[in-house]
Length: 109
Image 1 (cartoon, rainbow, N blue to C red):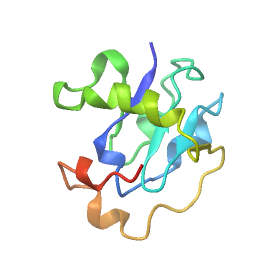
Image 2 (tube, one colour):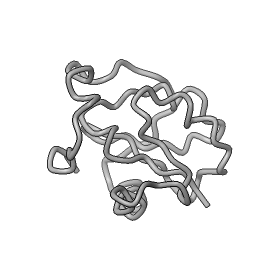
Image 3 (cartoon, helix red, strand yellow):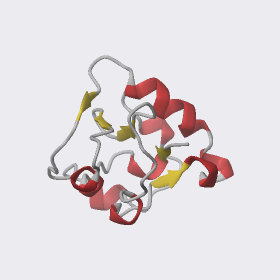
Image 4 (tube, helix red, strand yellow):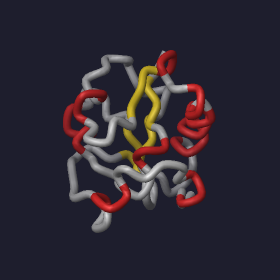
């Protein structure tokens, strides 16, 4: 099993989770983070760090977010989605987007 970053991360990209990850499994895209399932060791330390509750254990992903399991796999391998190992500032308008739902159309690949 692995952990999955879901829709809440889109247009926010808080990186609190990156600081606690012991295996550097996060990948950074233009406006979202994903978890590389080949690197994740299922330790769960990232879950409580996410200020928008975007990270779930794979078996706990809400039914309306299941597509993000495959999306994390796909985007973690995508060229340009590089490993992120240090916390950085969230996107400038993250606070405006953190409570918005149905953001999949905002995802920049």
